[in-house]
Image (cartoon, rainbow, N blue to C red; front, top):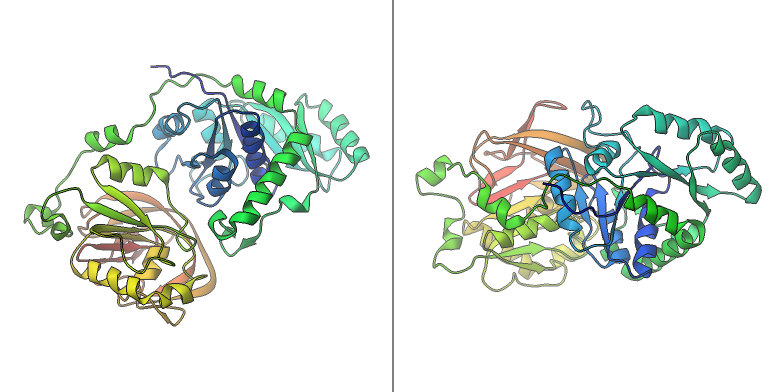
Amino acid sequence: MTSPSVPRLVVAAPSSRSGKTTVATGLMAAFAARGLAVSPHKVGPDYIDPGYHALATGRVGRNLDAYLCGPELVGPLFLHGARGCDIAVVEGVMGMYDGAAGEGELASTAHVAKLLRAPVVLVVDASSQSRSVAALVHGFVSFDPEVRVGGVILNKVASDRHEELLREALEQVGVPVLGVLRRAPQVDTPSRHLGLVPVAERRAAAVEAVAAMAAQVSAGCDLEALAALARSAGALSCAAWDAAEAVSSATHHPTRSERSDKRPGRQAEAGGGVPRVAVAGGPAFTFSYAEHAELLAAAGADVVPFDPLRDEELPEGTSGLVIGGGFPEVYAAELSANEGLRKAVAVLAESGAPVAAECAGLLYLCRELDGLPMCGVLDAGARMTERLTLGYRDAVAVGDSVLAAAGTRMRGHEFHRTAVEPGSGADPAWGFRTPHRRVEGFVQRGVHASYL
């Protein structure tokens, strides 16, 4: 099956901090300002950049992660997100050829570009070079002949003379210059311990930053040439992903606890009707994938968002709870002060209802976070640290839980500067072989809480 071709570009760079987010977000906003329906995507597990992409396009930002989902799902997930769109812009991750550690090209921007049969625009930070830019670009163009670099956008160019020198050098490589951006501090977005500050925490300022990115890209880039390059993308021989089909085709392996009719969370389904799954959101819990809620809805759940900073109770009739990632450490005082919600979460967990908590959700379920009371569902304390834990993980379910049967192998990602003590409960969630052997997380009643 060959799917209709959606014009698309992948925005890559030689390294992080080259200006990918500025260019990709600015391109999305600039194309949208021309009346195009723009589909925004991000390579890798990053949750924050898609928030800026959503501001730029008015559509949900979606991730394309060949490690977490498998290479075979990258095309279908892309087509799912790009349904009905005129053009798609895919922001890369790290340097163009940087992927999962020790796995070759897997999950790199280059890998995803090849899977999407999409041309690449290379964003180069030219702030400290002139003729050397030709050698740099030549290396990236020739490293993998299967990756098609269709043009270069030069970022942080100092002056007209600097631009002239760069263009002269790149003529030798034969890669067209599709844009030149000068230094522009107004497009900078603030960062902290896990990257950019999410849109939900600085909405007005974020809107201004995205508008500045769009203005800079519109003024400095050849949008017509970039759109033409996007139209040169090859057709994809796959169908769009569909949440309902994914749910119906999933193979179900009963856990031991299900076979004994003591499945965790069974109480939450008593009485029939549509189960209501509350999903934490708001500034403290901004990390989520759109497909998660779509899969829950396709499985028959009524998915209801709530904000643990503002809502004093769980949504009425909540029978399951998802608390994803975010920055509870930044909002620890406010989360702690919302005692009514903390107690409601504890009561729901005590009832045996299914509760899935990852990373930030794990911290929120702890007894305390940086000395401030949290939900107390887990007999563990959490605190900020100086150490960054970051990387993809291959994991195996240690025991049965609401998420997986014992022995189920999973792939995930860890990204945090906090520590939980103890790091696992009497029934851990996951076992890891690398980077070192350990168990992690908590499974108790219907609760599954983990950094993964």
